[in-house]
Length: 297
Image: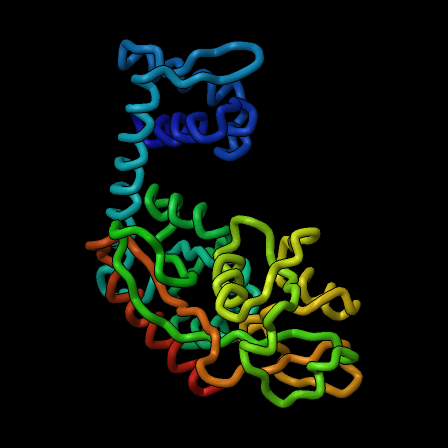
């Protein structure tokens, strides 16, 4: 038994498809199938039921795959400990971010990270919150940057910043001439929102509820940029996180971004990682860098 065999088993368990699992592991399908058969022979059990139409994990196969994830995570931790023993800001980190944050935060902080910590190699992954949490649980990711709170006590939490929402409206909308608006001005208005799965959708629905607004049930966007284009075409109004708002705006821009009066609707952005992680020092240094960089900007 070796670590590579365990990687093959985990890939088959998660993909439930030999060809996809082989592609994920960068090997041929016969190689992957052959190694799994050797692992089964060594253990004396059937791990995977092979049929023409589907791959079914046996009960013992699922149990072994779950344990294999722990073994692989521990093996990775050993390598990382050695690599970062003298310098916590060296080596690799797999960082996950939500889609409504990654395209807007990363350009702000990555230049500073590269400049100050050239030995740190960040692998960036963008998924919705539920997927990020599962990947952190499985030790496929080391650190998450996302909207808090998250309903779990499994992970440790670090605060980063509070991000206000602005109202994005077409420039020919009556509200576009207002320098600032109150939540009450959204009463009985329809809002364009993101589709299910985005945490920002839930936060926007909370704002709608407080303001007496409703959502446009006939349209749900897959991204903030789609929402932005819809507003620019005059199809409605929406909430836009502050980092996603352009730094410079002209009178010719098709969208106006209006700040809210106090109390301003906002979301809390922070970091999650597995409790007891030996990389905690690195996470705290990243926290401080993000906070300092955004404060300067």
